[in-house]
Length: 64
Length: 499
Image (cartoon, rainbow over all chains, first blue to last red):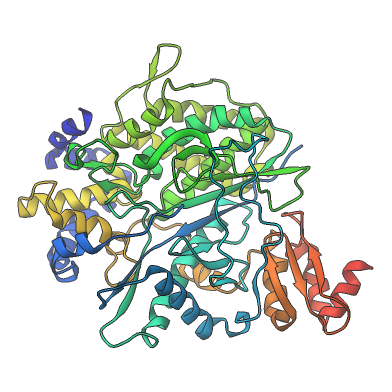
């Protein structure tokens, strides 16, 4: 299944290469990477404290 | 006939009342909206309520209502307000729902969709003082609870009544199935009946799992890719309103902008019979799910003539047709100058989706969410079934500014905070929403009811007076601005309009 294949396509270096090939977006690409590191650092602080309970209790009535 | 693509978006938000064991989403939604109205729009409460006179959601565009079709219910007893920006803010199916006013182009829709988000944020704040200690209402701009329950983000487009409905169905299906590659909001797992949640680690859209039919009247059960609700909220001899239920609620401005901007252009092309190739999927519902489940964007879809095509190639074909269409017909009927910007972004997005979708991590929702979750997953060595990733999926759509993961990512923007802030209270100036909004602002005390195509005034004498607004492109600032300025009372206005 294709969705299984995509798991393999992580490749950090591949992403970096692609960013460098496209000068127009490389700056925002670099910024994104730095932001991502920062975000991951702070994310544990804002994330729901008990992920399992939170996901379990997030129940909505069906709508349109 | 050239019908300008007047358009709008309606969003049902997910809602959670924290701090209680027995949350009731209907009363929480009512409390949320009423709190906002009391604080921000005291004049709209309790007098100006929605007028259901012209609502007929059971009317079917195919000309007949199949016996098994369930007509949507109209819940007239729940809170239902009209705001001075021309929008409707109400409780629908146990969710708070915000309908933007009618807009003339994708940029205007985006501003008003973002204004809606802001109104929900202010509503959460306003509700705090009404709740018991330790309770909090939180809303989420998503379309699924991950447990098989979905709620919608619908788009509406004004179309020419004379365009055969079959022609719309033919081409709109191929667009709705394939546009998922840039409008998807991303989702962990699958809710497709019969499929194990872990069989799909991550997919492009929130909604694809919930479609069961190609064409139909329902919106809450057996959802169809093309919804046939025929309720134009305008002159039914000239217009139809295409009610699109096959889309995600987007956090990304670019995703929202492309979703409505490109669709307006495609529908304009359908009216002009300007689409060069017909792509009929062998199984459109399955194609919808295949596209959503394929992060490589490379899986070909079966056509009924036995050939196969990738979603991105269908989009490229539509894009190439659109370039020719705009060269030939201009952009007047599909969003004016904004349509040119939509074209540029559409073309660039397709290029990047082809070369490396991850380049769009600051642009499109599904890419941004996937990249974030993948980075978190790698850092903590998690499997895709870890609850922390499902939690982050939901929290991506959290409307609280300090909690929203989408907002923390710093996605590309198109409109300014000032424009969004103003649109909380000001209507668009280039549709009939201007007339509705300005009348409410000026004479809210004299308006007893409002809906998309009329206002009902109580001027103190005579019976109630109804002003029909059957032309969505009339009632603009250019059209009625001077009259509204010169009239001091609603009676004067009625006399001027009748005279």
